[in-house]
Image 1 (cartoon, rainbow, N blue to C red):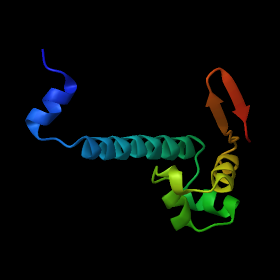
Image 2 (image 1 turned 45 degrees about the vertical axis):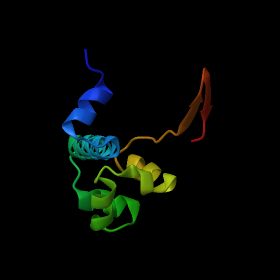
Image 3 (image 1 turned 120 degrees about the horizontal axis):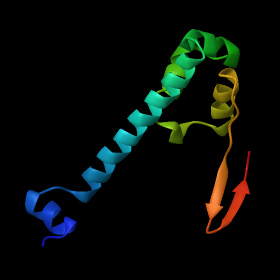
Image 4 (image 1 turned 90 degrees about the vertical axis):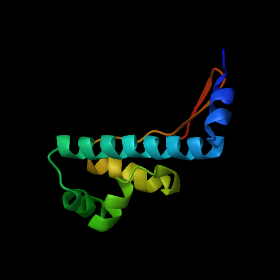
Length: 100
């Protein structure tokens, strides 16, 4: 029976390309969840932008799903604009460190 590595090699796939595509898919899922959370609160991007004191275009960027380049403060303000809270934690083994 072939391993996953054998299958990937035989098909000519590149592991890095697969990884990058997986990251894109994860970002798309995040984007969907963020948009749906906003819509569930009956808010437009413009409503959220006004609450955050930023442009609608910036809210659109937040909802793009690529949160890795966003500041923690931006994510926290986005959550607050939707009536929620933002938490940041570090998990190391069985230890949890709550940052925000």
